[in-house]
Length: 244
Image (cartoon, rainbow, N blue to C red; front, top):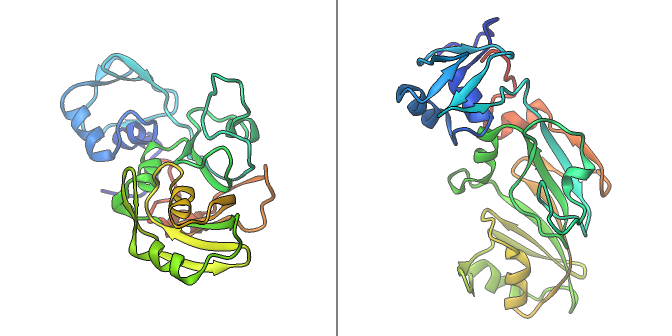
């Protein structure tokens, strides 16, 4: 398959994956092969390319053709919920970034926690960032109620602690002033907080500083930036979406 840009537009299977209509290009190809996809009213075929103004539908439901990939790196402040819409009217991460069609947060970061959160309009990239098979390590800095976490508790974190949803293990756990640093490749709900609670060190503040190769850096709470092409390549992903 050629990676040379084409004036006819993006490959249809990539459009479907990026728009979230399919969780991968392979599944998008299966939709096309099954005759469930139309472009400007005609049943699509494998290999079709889609210009930005095309009308794409899956099972009759319109799919918005992404104009370009957006990947934002946000420093989420405490007190902001990680969702697109909140029925309780609380501030959300979408209030902190510019609007883009299809833009949504990737993964979890609970309301009380701070730090690095990625947002994208690319469904395929969101899958790559969240699916366990890619094992992107996430790094956290925790401040704990009882100060610096002792060696015995750190060893328990590395060897595994029993939680209500199964055993959880830290890839790395190291002491830090007033708490510890933890690396995980899992992403269960409030996992770091629950793990530290289980070893007797309840968390009073939690900041995520890294997801895979992408680091929070000097971003202040509420600030955001675009992910760089080098960061996307480090994720194993093509940073040039147009015409591919």
